[in-house]
Image (spheres, helix red, strand yellow):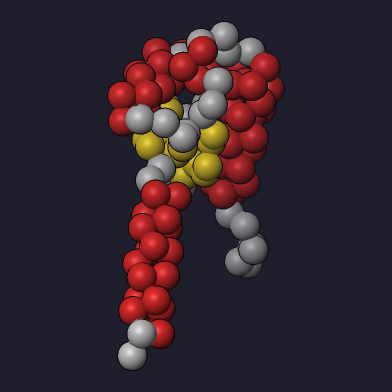
Amino acid sequence: MVHKFDRHVRVANLIREEIALLLSREVKDPKLQTVTITHVKVSRDLRRAQVFFSLMGTLKEREEAASSLKRAEGFIRRELGRSLHLKRIPALTFEYDDSYEKGMKIDALLKKLKEGGEDE
């Protein structure tokens, strides 16, 4: 039987929600104050989770946030274990999600094309 959502997708959504809550309530690092968890990909065996984040800021601020997230991984996993009650908490890797910037570039290009087309 095929289910609409596989377990790894449900777990990914739970992890995203829990990490977002942890960052807003528990993590005291000021470099993580403006971080947004955009989505999480969990492997089918639930052993690994890629956590994608975004933040409005400079390249240096993004690198500092990535470093802070990596340092907080143990704390985050421990708290996920307490709140999610899973048999195994996936190993976490944090990656910057640049989809917002890519979308802005595409919008700018489309606007430029549209403006160029109106001149003709």
